[in-house]
Image (cartoon, rainbow, N blue to C red; front, side, top):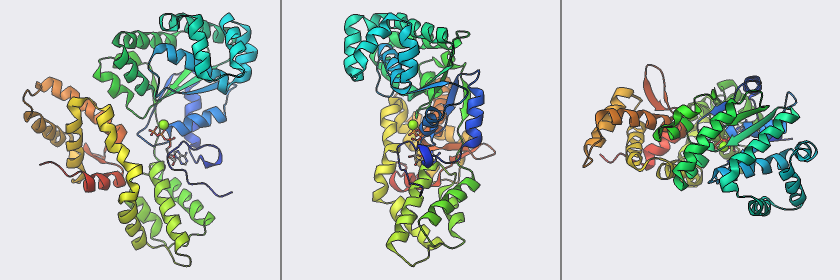
Length: 406
Ligand SMILES: Nc1ncnc2c1ncn2[C@@H]1O[C@H](COP(=O)(O)OP(=O)(O)OP(=O)(O)O)[C@@H](O)[C@H]1O
Ligand SMILES: [Mg+2]
């Protein structure tokens, strides 16, 4: 069966490529550790999580929860219970359901109903906003008694934390402490795997809470290697009978830079479309260049790339958003810049403010900003402390659409 080119959503089943060694490392690390899956945007974090759900190992019960829209600890616990029921019905009904009264109630209601109905029923029965910790303890005690390892995968955790904080700074603090204690309970039979498209450390550092997550083991999800990129391209081209010359694959690699899976899929989709519309013609380096300029950097790509820019307004501290845009514009026009040069640029921008921040504060916020730019825009040390976009498409996109203000 031909590999489908998936653009945007997580890949599952046969569409999930490579990552064999990474998955081995991840499963191995999950034996004893709670993991923070680190990887910039669109690297394939959610796809990896679904892979664990679809192909569990070591007799683990795996649960996936996207917490992007959640705004309170009570909702988090309720959704966790609901995800357990959805992802692992036999564990939920046949094992956990035997243990605790609340689950019996839940089971009574849940055979037919949707989460929101169950939530309302349960909320009516108990004051979850006040007693969520008690309910969570019941859940985790039940899991411990069953004595089978449960892996809770929490996606978009930073989004939820930001929302909880916005709604109730007090609950935010309580939740972070509770979550840390739960992770450190010995013999709990639970392991956590968390991820998000926003940088977790950068997010919590802004509020002074990064120490509350310093027990996570960080596992980096790498881009595809050059060989993987080549194999993927060959597979897609041969399945679609795309004829191409020897310069095409090196050119694709040069234009993209690091092979972030999403951008590779995007590029190959456009090349395969060209080939379908130009039957009998051979794809060459010049045509790849043309498609890159006209399509990938053109209006049609807006839907794929514009949200990178929009994130700044939504996720970055108000104070930093203009500086972030300025630094990216500056970098997009360079061949890479040293950290020193970037900081100097950041400082110059600060001087234009009516009340510039003191130097020490500025250094802290600069390093936080660099963390966010690494996750969102693939700004990385290219060697010798010279920082640059490691994705060429995003660099050229930024250069074209967001020129520096000065
Ligand atoms: N293993 C893979 N094989 C093939 N394509 C992949 C793979 N992983 C990711 N992709 C490509 O990357 C896109 C994004 O994947 P995914 O949603 O898993 O990334 P993410 O890191 O969770 O993104 P975000 O940071 O936005 O949440 C997919 O739509 C697909 O095009
Ligand atoms: Mg994701």
